[in-house]
Length: 206
Image (tube, rainbow, N blue to C red; front, side, top):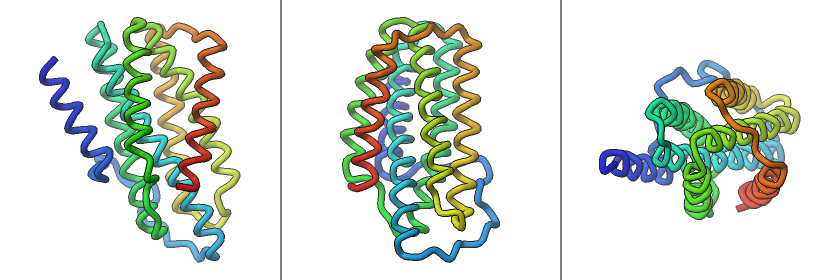
């Protein structure tokens, strides 16, 4: 438990300090920078800031759920997903830098809130926790699909990143379902959608 807490604290620092790294090739590697208008650049930056904040939340959720997992295989599955989400964090952070934009100023609050939600999901049991993963990834997949429609058509780099992230989210959700995830009640799904809308609205602007 002490080791898990130390590793979790280290990951939290890297998440909030911009120290996330990716071991996989960057999805937009080799693509030229797009010639965007100022309005297109601001819009793309806002959307990528939302995606970056979503990955901050994902780190907190997965870390908390891994910490409370009862089964070792479930803990490892959640930890592996968290490592891939950290790569998403690195990709979106780099893209924000390229767009001369910054992450959301309220990321620490979102991290803390997501960690608390992850703990709550975890203590209800592994099947419920995995069900939370399935629903989270389903909503994130839909959210990323809308961003593919909303990003400027010329912004090939951002679009490549979002497409790669979406593929990973689909895979995470399927893995959780195959591992025995329980379906969440509709109230929980509705609350998750509401929280996601608030996060999206705030992160795009602040």
